[in-house]
Length: 206
Image 1 (spheres, one colour):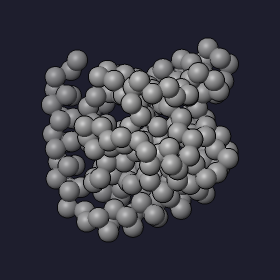
Image 2 (tube, helix red, strand yellow; image 1 turned 135 degrees about the horizontal axis):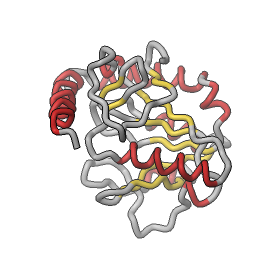
Image 3 (cartoon, one colour; image 1 turned 30 degrees about the vertical axis):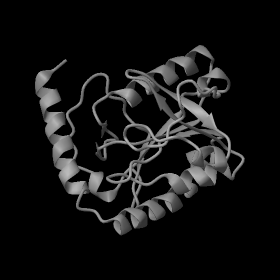
Image 4 (spheres, one colour; image 1 turned 180 degrees about the vertical axis):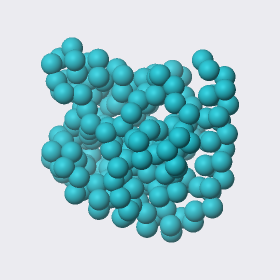
């Protein structure tokens, strides 16, 4: 592990947290609504049947509740993260009441308990689209996450699964606030970092 890159990433996360905590709840709601409209116009979203989406934290990122409710009321299948200390899987939620009944984890985010039987996205047809969170993004479609590596490892796992089953790998679309876009070259990159297909903001798509 490159200690210089780790240090640079840590500083970028700290700087971004300071920037994002200044955003009001109303601003988060406005940007989230604008992005949701753009997402519905995105071809890869319209064509996808099996979609994974993160459940948003209360602050500092695009709010995903309305997207989840939209998926649950459509003919698409909605998968959400379930994490252990080192791994993440995407498991299916089936209805609005199912979503609303999920207990909160230690980050105050709804998450299915590990002992609850759920359909795993890679048990059957795989995923067509992964909607990805992050801390910062650039126009080269690079991303820095929260530092645990969950998504980088999961995307790699999905790509291996797709190759093994003769399928196209899932499209990777990040959901970003306008303030999360940084100049190219700002994000320190390592070999394990996965490049995205698109980055969607309330104003534009890269």
